[in-house]
Image 1 (cartoon, rainbow, N blue to C red):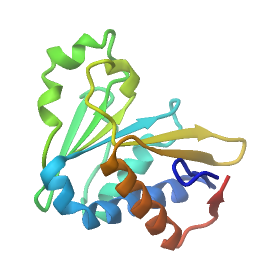
Image 2: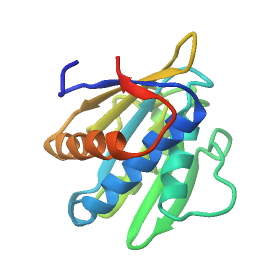
Image 3: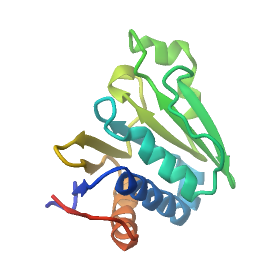
Image 4: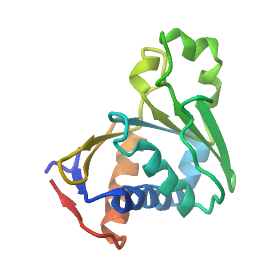
Length: 176
């Protein structure tokens, strides 16, 4: 395992949600940096790989109650937690990347925002630089998550996320 891009095996939905919860704890630690710079997290994986489950775990850990649904049809689900604005995007239905610009989505990325983007490849080349990439893959039993930093902010996030994830109670998780 390379620390620059650790891979973790998630035994199921509970571990995927635990990774999201660890990400929430990381956001709390980095809240001042996020206020100043923002954070762009790309979530990649096939349908059913756990992208929305991870976001649900993050939002629950931050205290968001109520339904946390995939923004597949709405394209965007906004959440406000403390002074942070979290935007959960799903660009699966984009026919062309230009829809990102036409929809005005670029204005959501910036200081004070955490943008969690499912299907980011469908909005390229218009998306801002990714700080943290989380690639989810379905395995025969469970899932894997490959974590890659894409910026100094992403590296800082990854280091804290890895520590927080390994400190959380979960069913089974470890290095791949």
